[in-house]
Amino acid sequence: MPVETMEIAVPDCFSFYECLSFLGRSHLEVLHRIENGCLYKAWMVEGEALLLKISAVPPQSPRTSQLLRIELLVGTPADEIRQEMTIYLEQLFDWKRDLTPFYEQAKQDEIMRPLVERYYGLRIVGIPDLFEALTWAIIGQQITLSFAYTMKKRFVEQFGEKVMYAGEAYWLYPTFQTVASLQVDDLRALQFTTKKAEYVIGVAQKMASAELTKEKLLAMQEPGQMHAALTSIRGVGAWTADYVMMKCLQQASAFPIADVGLHNALKIQLGWQEKPSLTQIRQMAQKWKGWEAYATFYLWRSLYDDIT
DNA sequence: GCCCAGGTGTCTG
DNA sequence: CAGACACATGGG
Image (tube, rainbow, N blue to C red; front, side, top):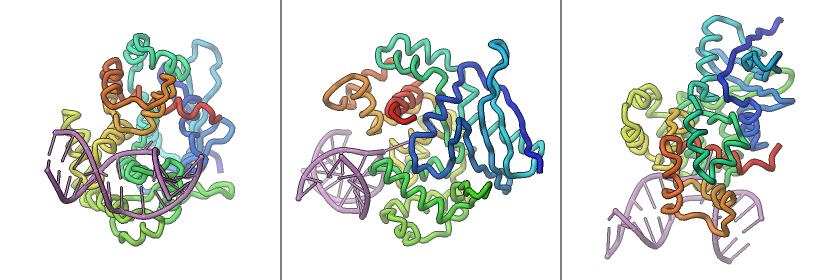
């Protein structure tokens, strides 16, 4: 069976390689695989489970625009799929944003300047699915990232669907429809705390009833309104709201200021013995106005330098 | 054994 | 409104 291949042009100032580095930060990640510079990702569109292989096309000449090659390893090619896929990739790699203002601003900041040089072309790698963004954040609250990945792996492999290809399983995140009908004990069995289990199921139920949708959140004009709507959900505090606004709702000024990873990254970048205080971080963030999410993301990226 | 992890909800003064 | 504390578990 022939594999459907399409090539799409990506914006200037986009580094697929840098985004792959971020995606490769955990060996416990179950929602994608990276091999030989290619990204393999299962993806659900209109009820059909697909498998994508994404790779960078080497430029023919410096003048040709940069291309990404998308191969549909599993799934039926169709025009709707091509369209949806473009939208999906735009959100996954935040392609619609012009990074020029961020880079200009970063030149004036001692902390950001070396990072934007080192990771030039890195864009916020998003989580387009609202249910995944919210519940992944909830799972990650107050535990080490590696434990969070372990819990996510159990959750995905227990309640998600998989696409098989060449003897390997490619997993899809569980849907809110599935999770909405779970009991707390179903998740306790995966070492969720009682509270986390309640929060995750609660989010699923709010989405199943369409009380909570990505469209409604995006329709809000003020970022503050979006933030308030999110924190009204049980289990979603300021950190989670900002995380979701940054990773799913594409709000460049979202700022998860309480994030421990952010604190550690700043400590390392500054060469300090202690982590900066919230007051000090607010001071530093004066220079990131409007781009707090990007500053945070570049700082997170700096934590994974030792990983290939 | 103690402290910290990609925090949040609840209670108290 | 700030501060303390429970939640639960893994790793250094």
